[in-house]
Length: 448
Image 1 (cartoon, rainbow, N blue to C red):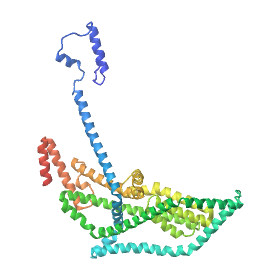
Image 2 (image 1 turned 180 degrees about the vertical axis):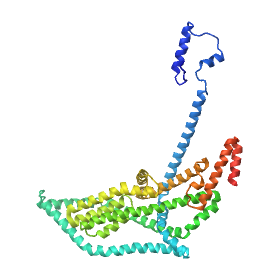
Image 3 (image 1 turned 30 degrees about the vertical axis):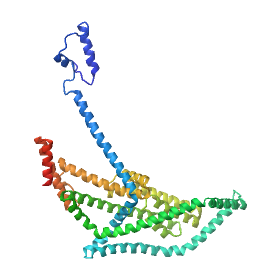
Image 4 (image 1 turned 60 degrees about the horizontal axis):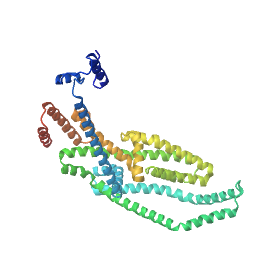
Protein backbone atom coordinates (compact mmCIF):
# COMPACT_ATOMS: atom_id res chain seq x y z
CA UNK A 1 0.00 0.00 0.00
CA UNK A 2 1.38 3.38 -0.98
CA UNK A 3 2.23 5.55 1.97
CA UNK A 4 0.27 8.80 2.18
CA UNK A 5 2.19 11.98 2.99
CA UNK A 6 0.55 14.87 4.88
CA UNK A 7 1.98 17.18 2.22
CA UNK A 8 -0.27 15.33 -0.29
CA UNK A 9 -3.75 15.69 1.31
CA UNK A 10 -5.64 14.78 -1.88
CA UNK A 11 -4.65 11.12 -1.49
CA UNK A 12 -6.00 11.09 2.08
CA UNK A 13 -9.28 12.65 0.98
CA UNK A 14 -9.64 10.12 -1.84
CA UNK A 15 -9.06 7.25 0.58
CA UNK A 16 -11.70 8.63 2.95
CA UNK A 17 -14.22 8.86 0.08
CA UNK A 18 -13.46 5.24 -0.91
CA UNK A 19 -14.20 4.07 2.64
CA UNK A 20 -17.47 6.06 2.67
CA UNK A 21 -18.52 4.44 -0.60
CA UNK A 22 -17.81 0.91 0.73
CA UNK A 23 -20.00 1.40 3.80
CA UNK A 24 -22.77 2.98 1.75
CA UNK A 25 -22.47 6.62 2.65
CA UNK A 26 -20.86 8.92 5.12
CA UNK A 27 -19.44 7.24 8.18
CA UNK A 28 -21.81 8.04 11.07
CA UNK A 29 -20.02 6.17 13.83
CA UNK A 30 -19.67 8.10 17.11
CA UNK A 31 -16.70 10.43 17.48
CA UNK A 32 -13.72 8.65 19.00
CA UNK A 33 -10.36 10.26 19.66
CA UNK A 34 -8.36 7.14 18.64
CA UNK A 35 -10.39 6.83 15.45
CA UNK A 36 -9.78 10.52 14.63
CA UNK A 37 -6.08 10.05 15.25
CA UNK A 38 -6.03 7.03 12.95
CA UNK A 39 -7.59 9.07 10.15
CA UNK A 40 -4.79 11.67 10.32
CA UNK A 41 -1.87 10.74 8.05
CA UNK A 42 0.45 12.98 10.14
CA UNK A 43 2.07 10.28 12.34
CA UNK A 44 5.29 12.16 13.19
CA UNK A 45 5.78 15.50 14.87
CA UNK A 46 2.75 17.74 14.62
CA UNK A 47 2.97 19.74 11.39
CA UNK A 48 1.62 22.82 13.17
CA UNK A 49 4.57 22.72 15.56
CA UNK A 50 7.05 22.48 12.69
CA UNK A 51 5.40 25.35 10.82
CA UNK A 52 5.27 27.43 13.99
CA UNK A 53 8.98 26.86 14.63
CA UNK A 54 9.84 27.79 11.04
CA UNK A 55 7.78 30.97 11.22
CA UNK A 56 9.33 31.87 14.56
CA UNK A 57 12.84 31.35 13.11
CA UNK A 58 12.00 33.40 10.01
CA UNK A 59 10.46 36.22 12.02
CA UNK A 60 13.40 36.29 14.41
CA UNK A 61 16.04 36.55 11.68
CA UNK A 62 13.92 38.99 9.69
CA UNK A 63 13.77 41.27 12.71
CA UNK A 64 17.53 41.00 13.17
CA UNK A 65 18.07 41.82 9.51
CA UNK A 66 15.79 44.87 9.72
CA UNK A 67 17.62 46.11 12.83
CA UNK A 68 21.02 45.69 11.16
CA UNK A 69 19.87 47.53 8.01
CA UNK A 70 18.35 50.33 10.09
CA UNK A 71 21.51 50.65 12.18
CA UNK A 72 23.64 50.77 9.02
CA UNK A 73 21.42 53.49 7.59
CA UNK A 74 21.71 55.53 10.80
CA UNK A 75 25.50 55.15 10.81
CA UNK A 76 25.73 56.34 7.19
CA UNK A 77 23.51 59.32 7.96
CA UNK A 78 25.66 60.26 10.96
CA UNK A 79 28.81 59.94 8.87
CA UNK A 80 27.23 62.19 6.27
CA UNK A 81 26.45 64.80 8.92
CA UNK A 82 30.01 64.79 10.30
CA UNK A 83 31.77 64.10 7.00
CA UNK A 84 33.47 67.55 6.81
CA UNK A 85 35.00 66.94 10.24
CA UNK A 86 35.92 63.32 9.52
CA UNK A 87 37.59 64.06 6.18
CA UNK A 88 40.79 65.64 7.65
CA UNK A 89 41.08 62.74 10.11
CA UNK A 90 40.84 60.17 7.33
CA UNK A 91 43.34 62.08 5.19
CA UNK A 92 45.74 62.35 8.14
CA UNK A 93 45.54 58.60 8.74
CA UNK A 94 46.44 57.84 5.13
CA UNK A 95 49.32 60.35 5.16
CA UNK A 96 50.54 58.78 8.39
CA UNK A 97 50.69 55.35 6.78
CA UNK A 98 53.05 56.81 4.15
CA UNK A 99 55.31 58.68 6.57
CA UNK A 100 55.38 56.10 9.35
CA UNK A 101 58.21 53.86 7.96
CA UNK A 102 60.90 56.62 8.03
CA UNK A 103 59.55 57.95 11.33
CA UNK A 104 59.69 54.47 12.84
CA UNK A 105 63.30 54.09 11.63
CA UNK A 106 64.27 57.38 13.28
CA UNK A 107 62.54 56.43 16.53
CA UNK A 108 64.37 53.09 16.49
CA UNK A 109 67.65 55.06 16.32
CA UNK A 110 66.77 56.98 19.50
CA UNK A 111 65.41 60.13 17.85
CA UNK A 112 62.80 61.80 20.11
CA UNK A 113 59.21 61.21 18.94
CA UNK A 114 58.49 64.87 18.22
CA UNK A 115 61.68 65.34 16.21
CA UNK A 116 61.10 62.07 14.35
CA UNK A 117 57.57 63.15 13.39
CA UNK A 118 58.79 66.57 12.33
CA UNK A 119 61.66 65.00 10.38
CA UNK A 120 59.29 62.66 8.52
CA UNK A 121 57.04 65.54 7.49
CA UNK A 122 60.03 67.66 6.42
CA UNK A 123 61.26 64.70 4.36
CA UNK A 124 57.91 64.56 2.59
CA UNK A 125 58.04 68.30 1.86
CA UNK A 126 61.59 67.93 0.52
CA UNK A 127 60.55 65.10 -1.82
CA UNK A 128 57.51 66.96 -3.14
CA UNK A 129 59.49 70.19 -3.42
CA UNK A 130 62.29 68.38 -5.24
CA UNK A 131 59.87 67.01 -7.80
CA UNK A 132 58.48 70.50 -8.35
CA UNK A 133 62.00 71.91 -8.65
CA UNK A 134 62.86 69.34 -11.31
CA UNK A 135 59.68 69.91 -13.31
CA UNK A 136 59.56 73.72 -13.02
CA UNK A 137 62.55 74.53 -15.33
CA UNK A 138 61.09 72.33 -18.07
CA UNK A 139 57.71 73.99 -17.79
CA UNK A 140 59.17 77.51 -17.78
CA UNK A 141 61.40 76.82 -20.79
CA UNK A 142 58.58 75.35 -22.89
CA UNK A 143 55.71 77.51 -21.68
CA UNK A 144 56.44 80.43 -24.01
CA UNK A 145 56.52 78.19 -27.06
CA UNK A 146 53.29 76.54 -25.93
CA UNK A 147 51.53 79.91 -25.62
CA UNK A 148 52.74 80.95 -29.10
CA UNK A 149 51.50 77.64 -30.49
CA UNK A 150 48.13 78.20 -28.80
CA UNK A 151 47.73 81.60 -30.44
CA UNK A 152 48.80 80.18 -33.79
CA UNK A 153 46.32 77.32 -33.37
CA UNK A 154 43.46 79.73 -32.70
CA UNK A 155 44.37 81.80 -35.74
CA UNK A 156 44.62 78.65 -37.86
CA UNK A 157 41.21 77.56 -36.70
CA UNK A 158 39.76 80.94 -37.62
CA UNK A 159 41.34 80.77 -41.09
CA UNK A 160 39.95 77.27 -41.63
CA UNK A 161 36.48 78.47 -40.70
CA UNK A 162 36.73 81.32 -43.20
CA UNK A 163 38.54 79.64 -46.10
CA UNK A 164 37.46 76.04 -45.57
CA UNK A 165 34.36 74.28 -46.84
CA UNK A 166 32.16 76.12 -44.35
CA UNK A 167 33.07 79.58 -45.78
CA UNK A 168 32.09 81.40 -42.61
CA UNK A 169 32.21 85.19 -43.09
CA UNK A 170 34.36 87.18 -40.61
CA UNK A 171 31.29 89.19 -39.60
CA UNK A 172 29.61 85.94 -38.50
CA UNK A 173 32.60 85.11 -36.32
CA UNK A 174 32.54 88.60 -34.79
CA UNK A 175 28.78 88.28 -34.23
CA UNK A 176 29.20 84.91 -32.50
CA UNK A 177 31.96 86.37 -30.32
CA UNK A 178 29.75 89.33 -29.38
CA UNK A 179 26.87 86.98 -28.60
CA UNK A 180 29.05 84.95 -26.24
CA UNK A 181 30.31 88.13 -24.61
CA UNK A 182 26.76 89.42 -24.07
CA UNK A 183 25.73 86.08 -22.61
CA UNK A 184 28.60 86.21 -20.16
CA UNK A 185 27.71 89.75 -19.15
CA UNK A 186 24.06 88.85 -18.59
CA UNK A 187 25.09 85.90 -16.45
CA UNK A 188 27.46 87.94 -14.36
CA UNK A 189 25.59 87.41 -11.09
CA UNK A 190 25.48 83.67 -11.48
CA UNK A 191 29.11 83.51 -12.53
CA UNK A 192 30.07 85.64 -9.54
CA UNK A 193 28.12 83.33 -7.24
CA UNK A 194 29.83 80.28 -8.70
CA UNK A 195 33.24 81.95 -8.45
CA UNK A 196 32.54 82.83 -4.82
CA UNK A 197 31.47 79.23 -4.20
CA UNK A 198 34.73 78.07 -5.77
CA UNK A 199 36.71 80.43 -3.56
CA UNK A 200 34.84 79.16 -0.50
CA UNK A 201 35.55 75.57 -1.52
CA UNK A 202 39.22 76.40 -2.02
CA UNK A 203 39.32 77.96 1.42
CA UNK A 204 37.68 74.88 2.93
CA UNK A 205 40.21 72.64 1.18
CA UNK A 206 43.05 74.79 2.55
CA UNK A 207 41.69 74.59 6.10
CA UNK A 208 41.15 70.83 5.85
CA UNK A 209 44.70 70.43 4.54
CA UNK A 210 46.15 72.38 7.47
CA UNK A 211 44.10 70.36 9.98
CA UNK A 212 45.18 67.13 8.29
CA UNK A 213 48.86 68.14 8.52
CA UNK A 214 48.54 69.00 12.22
CA UNK A 215 46.76 65.71 12.92
CA UNK A 216 49.43 63.85 10.93
CA UNK A 217 52.13 65.30 13.21
CA UNK A 218 50.30 64.15 16.34
CA UNK A 219 49.54 60.73 14.86
CA UNK A 220 53.22 60.23 14.04
CA UNK A 221 54.31 61.52 17.44
CA UNK A 222 51.79 59.83 19.75
CA UNK A 223 50.41 57.02 17.58
CA UNK A 224 52.33 54.16 19.27
CA UNK A 225 50.81 55.18 22.63
CA UNK A 226 47.24 54.72 21.41
CA UNK A 227 46.95 50.92 21.65
CA UNK A 228 48.47 50.66 25.17
CA UNK A 229 46.10 53.40 26.33
CA UNK A 230 43.20 51.54 24.71
CA UNK A 231 44.07 48.27 26.48
CA UNK A 232 44.23 50.05 29.82
CA UNK A 233 40.92 51.81 29.19
CA UNK A 234 38.79 48.85 28.03
CA UNK A 235 40.49 45.97 29.84
CA UNK A 236 42.92 43.28 28.79
CA UNK A 237 40.36 40.98 27.15
CA UNK A 238 38.62 43.53 24.94
CA UNK A 239 41.91 45.38 24.49
CA UNK A 240 43.52 42.27 23.01
CA UNK A 241 40.77 42.00 20.39
CA UNK A 242 40.96 45.72 19.55
CA UNK A 243 44.76 45.65 19.33
CA UNK A 244 44.76 42.74 16.88
CA UNK A 245 41.89 44.09 14.75
CA UNK A 246 43.23 47.65 14.55
CA UNK A 247 46.75 46.45 13.76
CA UNK A 248 45.44 44.37 10.88
CA UNK A 249 43.44 47.36 9.66
CA UNK A 250 46.54 49.56 9.80
CA UNK A 251 48.53 47.04 7.75
CA UNK A 252 45.72 46.97 5.20
CA UNK A 253 45.69 50.77 4.84
CA UNK A 254 49.45 50.75 4.30
CA UNK A 255 49.00 48.18 1.55
CA UNK A 256 46.36 50.37 -0.09
CA UNK A 257 48.73 53.35 -0.32
CA UNK A 258 51.52 51.22 -1.75
CA UNK A 259 49.17 49.70 -4.30
CA UNK A 260 47.81 53.09 -5.33
CA UNK A 261 51.35 54.39 -5.79
CA UNK A 262 52.21 51.42 -8.02
CA UNK A 263 49.09 51.91 -10.13
CA UNK A 264 49.73 55.66 -10.51
CA UNK A 265 53.37 55.01 -11.43
CA UNK A 266 52.39 52.50 -14.13
CA UNK A 267 49.81 54.95 -15.54
CA UNK A 268 52.22 57.88 -15.63
CA UNK A 269 55.05 55.83 -17.18
CA UNK A 270 52.88 54.35 -19.93
CA UNK A 271 51.30 57.69 -20.80
CA UNK A 272 54.69 59.43 -20.56
CA UNK A 273 56.23 56.98 -23.04
CA UNK A 274 53.46 57.78 -25.50
CA UNK A 275 53.93 61.53 -25.01
CA UNK A 276 57.70 61.27 -25.55
CA UNK A 277 57.27 59.18 -28.72
CA UNK A 278 54.80 61.72 -30.10
CA UNK A 279 57.16 64.57 -29.10
CA UNK A 280 54.50 66.35 -27.03
CA UNK A 281 55.83 69.36 -25.07
CA UNK A 282 55.86 69.34 -21.25
CA UNK A 283 55.98 65.53 -21.23
CA UNK A 284 57.77 65.39 -17.85
CA UNK A 285 55.31 67.79 -16.23
CA UNK A 286 52.40 65.78 -17.60
CA UNK A 287 53.91 62.55 -16.25
CA UNK A 288 54.17 64.04 -12.76
CA UNK A 289 50.63 65.44 -13.02
CA UNK A 290 49.34 62.01 -14.07
CA UNK A 291 51.10 60.32 -11.15
CA UNK A 292 49.61 62.58 -8.49
CA UNK A 293 46.26 62.66 -10.25
CA UNK A 294 46.09 58.87 -9.99
CA UNK A 295 45.58 59.21 -6.22
CA UNK A 296 42.28 61.03 -6.85
CA UNK A 297 39.79 58.63 -8.43
CA UNK A 298 37.89 59.66 -11.55
CA UNK A 299 38.56 63.42 -11.45
CA UNK A 300 42.35 63.19 -11.08
CA UNK A 301 42.84 60.90 -14.06
CA UNK A 302 40.28 62.87 -16.12
CA UNK A 303 41.95 66.23 -15.37
CA UNK A 304 45.45 64.97 -16.12
CA UNK A 305 44.29 63.33 -19.34
CA UNK A 306 42.44 66.48 -20.44
CA UNK A 307 45.55 68.61 -19.94
CA UNK A 308 47.67 66.15 -21.93
CA UNK A 309 45.17 66.11 -24.82
CA UNK A 310 44.96 69.92 -24.91
CA UNK A 311 48.74 70.27 -24.96
CA UNK A 312 48.96 67.74 -27.79
CA UNK A 313 46.20 69.58 -29.67
CA UNK A 314 47.98 72.91 -29.43
CA UNK A 315 51.44 71.53 -30.21
CA UNK A 316 50.69 68.93 -32.86
CA UNK A 317 47.21 69.42 -34.18
CA UNK A 318 44.05 67.36 -34.10
CA UNK A 319 45.64 64.10 -35.29
CA UNK A 320 48.26 64.03 -32.52
CA UNK A 321 45.62 64.98 -29.94
CA UNK A 322 43.42 62.05 -31.03
CA UNK A 323 46.36 59.66 -30.71
CA UNK A 324 47.13 60.95 -27.20
CA UNK A 325 43.45 60.61 -26.28
CA UNK A 326 43.42 56.98 -27.47
CA UNK A 327 46.57 56.21 -25.46
CA UNK A 328 45.13 57.78 -22.30
CA UNK A 329 41.77 56.01 -22.63
CA UNK A 330 43.47 52.65 -23.25
CA UNK A 331 45.81 53.03 -20.25
CA UNK A 332 43.01 54.18 -17.94
CA UNK A 333 40.73 51.36 -19.02
CA UNK A 334 43.43 48.77 -18.36
CA UNK A 335 44.24 50.44 -15.03
CA UNK A 336 40.64 50.82 -13.90
CA UNK A 337 39.32 47.40 -14.92
CA UNK A 338 42.39 45.15 -14.67
CA UNK A 339 45.43 46.53 -12.86
CA UNK A 340 43.87 48.41 -9.97
CA UNK A 341 41.22 45.82 -9.02
CA UNK A 342 43.77 43.01 -9.35
CA UNK A 343 46.48 44.63 -7.22
CA UNK A 344 44.06 45.99 -4.63
CA UNK A 345 42.27 42.66 -4.39
CA UNK A 346 45.59 40.95 -3.65
CA UNK A 347 47.04 43.51 -1.25
CA UNK A 348 43.76 43.88 0.66
CA UNK A 349 42.21 40.43 0.00
CA UNK A 350 39.22 41.97 -1.75
CA UNK A 351 37.47 40.63 -4.82
CA UNK A 352 37.78 43.00 -7.80
CA UNK A 353 33.99 43.32 -7.93
CA UNK A 354 33.98 44.56 -4.32
CA UNK A 355 36.58 47.18 -5.24
CA UNK A 356 34.53 48.47 -8.16
CA UNK A 357 31.24 48.47 -6.24
CA UNK A 358 32.77 50.23 -3.22
CA UNK A 359 34.18 53.01 -5.41
CA UNK A 360 30.80 53.44 -7.13
CA UNK A 361 28.92 53.56 -3.81
CA UNK A 362 31.40 55.90 -2.13
CA UNK A 363 31.40 58.29 -5.08
CA UNK A 364 27.61 58.40 -5.31
CA UNK A 365 27.11 58.99 -1.56
CA UNK A 366 30.09 61.18 -0.58
CA UNK A 367 31.49 62.54 -3.84
CA UNK A 368 35.14 62.46 -4.87
CA UNK A 369 36.51 62.00 -1.31
CA UNK A 370 34.06 59.15 -0.83
CA UNK A 371 35.35 57.46 -3.99
CA UNK A 372 38.93 57.86 -2.76
CA UNK A 373 38.27 56.46 0.72
CA UNK A 374 35.78 53.79 -0.40
CA UNK A 375 38.37 51.08 -1.05
CA UNK A 376 40.28 51.44 2.26
CA UNK A 377 36.99 51.55 4.16
CA UNK A 378 35.76 48.41 2.40
CA UNK A 379 39.10 46.73 3.11
CA UNK A 380 38.89 47.68 6.79
CA UNK A 381 35.37 46.24 7.03
CA UNK A 382 36.61 43.04 5.36
CA UNK A 383 39.46 42.80 7.89
CA UNK A 384 37.05 43.13 10.81
CA UNK A 385 34.69 40.58 9.25
CA UNK A 386 37.49 38.04 8.77
CA UNK A 387 38.67 38.58 12.35
CA UNK A 388 35.13 37.98 13.64
CA UNK A 389 34.91 34.83 11.52
CA UNK A 390 38.17 33.58 13.03
CA UNK A 391 36.79 34.10 16.53
CA UNK A 392 33.69 32.09 15.62
CA UNK A 393 35.85 29.29 14.19
CA UNK A 394 37.84 29.17 17.44
CA UNK A 395 34.67 28.72 19.44
CA UNK A 396 33.16 26.10 17.13
CA UNK A 397 36.37 24.08 17.03
CA UNK A 398 36.91 24.60 13.29
CA UNK A 399 40.25 26.34 13.94
CA UNK A 400 42.96 26.42 16.58
CA UNK A 401 45.22 29.32 17.62
CA UNK A 402 48.20 27.56 16.03
CA UNK A 403 46.47 27.52 12.63
CA UNK A 404 45.86 31.29 12.57
CA UNK A 405 48.27 34.08 11.69
CA UNK A 406 48.42 36.79 14.35
CA UNK A 407 49.67 40.33 13.82
CA UNK A 408 50.35 40.94 17.53
CA UNK A 409 50.99 39.01 20.73
CA UNK A 410 47.61 40.24 21.97
CA UNK A 411 46.02 38.51 18.98
CA UNK A 412 47.51 35.18 20.06
CA UNK A 413 46.21 35.75 23.59
CA UNK A 414 42.73 36.59 22.28
CA UNK A 415 42.76 33.41 20.16
CA UNK A 416 43.61 31.24 23.16
CA UNK A 417 40.81 32.84 25.17
CA UNK A 418 38.43 32.23 22.27
CA UNK A 419 39.34 28.54 22.14
CA UNK A 420 38.79 28.18 25.91
CA UNK A 421 35.45 29.92 25.58
CA UNK A 422 34.48 27.42 22.87
CA UNK A 423 35.32 24.50 25.19
CA UNK A 424 33.18 26.11 27.89
CA UNK A 425 30.23 26.48 25.52
CA UNK A 426 30.56 22.83 24.49
CA UNK A 427 30.50 21.66 28.12
CA UNK A 428 27.49 23.81 28.93
CA UNK A 429 25.62 22.42 25.94
CA UNK A 430 26.29 18.81 26.92
CA UNK A 431 25.41 19.33 30.58
CA UNK A 432 22.17 21.11 29.66
CA UNK A 433 22.39 23.88 32.24
CA UNK A 434 19.64 26.46 32.44
CA UNK A 435 20.00 29.82 30.80
CA UNK A 436 20.49 31.58 34.16
CA UNK A 437 23.18 29.18 35.27
CA UNK A 438 24.80 29.37 31.86
CA UNK A 439 24.85 33.17 32.02
CA UNK A 440 26.38 33.06 35.49
CA UNK A 441 29.14 30.71 34.37
CA UNK A 442 29.80 32.76 31.23
CA UNK A 443 30.18 35.90 33.32
CA UNK A 444 32.48 34.12 35.79
CA UNK A 445 34.61 32.67 33.00
CA UNK A 446 34.84 36.04 31.24
CA UNK A 447 35.88 37.65 34.53
CA UNK A 448 38.57 35.03 35.07
